[in-house]
Each structure stands twice: as structure tokens, then as C-alpha cells.
Amino acid sequence: MTTKTAWITGASSGFGAAAVERFVAGGWRVIASGRRMERLQPLVARHGAGRVHAAAFDVRDEAAMRAAHAALPSAFADIDLLVNNAGLALGTAPAQQASLEQWKQMIDTNVTALVSLTHLLLPQLIARRGAIVNVSSIAGSYAYRGGNVYGGTKAFVTQFSQNLRTDLHGTGVRVTSIEPGMAETEFTLVRTGGDQAASDQLYAGAQPITATDIADTIWWIANLPPHLNINRIEVMPVSQSAAGLQVHRN
Ligand code: NDP
Ligand code: 8X3
Image 1 (cartoon, rainbow, N blue to C red):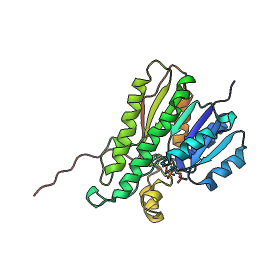
Image 2 (image 1 turned 45 degrees about the vertical axis):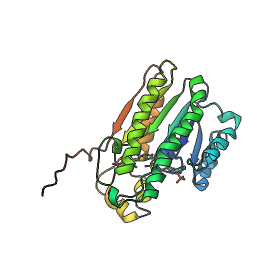
Image 3 (image 1 turned 30 degrees about the vertical axis):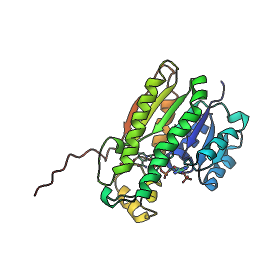
Image 4 (image 1 turned 60 degrees about the vertical axis):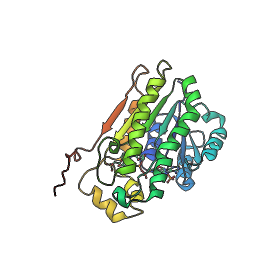
């Protein structure tokens, strides 16, 4: 059987790091990208340079993204799967108190970078009848206080995934939007600017989704028979569910 290659963004932490482990264990080659090389290098050391290629760059830097693509070793050049996972939420404040800089960083990372890498890899994904798994969020479907631009970026990811699927009709390329709920990773640490107590408090007693749960879901999606496409998949911990609307009264 030929060895397949996945490019997993956001591989230095959380879902992405767990997905690297899952795909390498399953016999795939993985291009692991993220900004923190010190987190990517141990993956190469653990699995070998023939199995994992580390590409450290900021996804918001399109030139760096193109350079990383152009510099792929030949064994990693034929990409079968793109996992667009790099992303972040910044801040929990309501829109009227939020930072415009943080809003722009979320849009640049979660939206602009995601479409840029997709655009770059589409020709070869089509040539190889490959697949794209976009990591969206329940925040794109359910409004919650402080979700403002983060939720907006994820609604984009979900809808972009569905529109991609329509445009790719007949190419054999599969596209999935995976929409997790509350998962314990570095996500809340990043969102709160490093507030470990806030992160611990959010997840305490809730038995949240783990990074491995999402890695296993991505693995399952990628390894379904080629005539099947999971369009959207929403995953929540049993402890989380939607709660209704609010009414303000004078
Ligand atoms: P983590 O913070 O643990 O991981 C985020 C990853 O994204 C890191 O590897 C980080 O790498 C990478 N990343 C962020 N910004 C950039 C950038 N500018 N350039 C390159 N890489 C970047 O969080 P999760 O694993 O939880 O998040 C992964 C995805 O899942 C995100 O898109 C998030 O929105 C989504 N998600 C998370 C949920 C959760 O509750 N945890 C639920 C639903 C969706 P580095 O810092 O090294 O650059
Ligand atoms: C992150 C999940 O529930 O915090 O995308 O919005 S949630």
C-alpha cells in the first residue's frame, strides 16, 4: 500500500499534535506545521524525518507559507489530506469591549490563512483525489456571549467547507467541516492570555472533549471508503448542550 501524506496545521499543540500522532501511528507521513519549532522538532525526533516533516511558520505570512510548501522534501511533496486546524480565539469580552487587533488576528488566522493554504494546495489535492478537513467549531452555529468574531470566523469555515464541496463536485475531493464543542487543549490558555486558573475552571468537572477524541474523529473521516463524504460533523462532550435565547426587559 502506498504511504499517504497529510499536512496538519496547528500541529504544535492540542488537536493538531494529537492528529500527528494518530496519522503517524496509522502509517501516514505528516507535514506538521505551527509557529513553535520547539514543539514540532520533538515530533520529528520521535518518529523520524522520513515520517514527520516540521514546517515552522506563521500561517498569516503567505510568503512563508509558500516557501514552506516549496521547500517540502520530495517524500512529502504529494499531499493527500489537508487538515486546516491552526486557529485561535482571543478574548472573552463582549463586542463593545473587544480589541480590534484581536479580532483582526482571529480573522487573519482562522479565515485568511485557511483559505490561502487551501488555495495553494487545491491543484494537487484535485490531482490526487485528496481530502480537506477544516476544523470549525460549534461557535460558528451557536451564539454565546463573547463569541463575536471567533464565532464569525468559524461560521465562515463551516460555510466555506460546504461551498468548496459544491465547487469540487466531480473531482473526487472530499471536504469536511468538523465542529467541536468544549475541548481541553491550550485553547483557553491562549484565549485568556495565559490564565491557567480560568482554563482549569472552565474544564473542571465537565469531562470535556480531549485532543485525542478529535484526532480519532479526523482519522475516521480521512479513512472512510472514497465514495463517502462527511459534510459536517458536530461533536460535543455529553456535559455540554445548547441553552436558549435571552430577553432583556426594561
Ligand atoms: P491549541 O491552542 O492547543 O492549538 C492551536 C494550534 O494553532 C497551535 O498548534 C498553534 O501553533 C496553531 N496556531 C495558532 N496561530 C497560528 C499562527 N498564526 N500560525 C501558525 N499556527 C498557529 O488549540 P486547539 O487544539 O483546541 O485548536 C485547534 C483548532 O480547533 C482551532 O482552529 C480552534 O479554533 C478549534 N477548536 C477548538 C476547540 C476547543 O474547545 N479547544 C473547540 C472547537 C474548535 P503555534 O502557537 O505554535 O503557532
Ligand atoms: C471552541 C469551542 O465552545 O468554546 O471553538 O466555542 S467553544
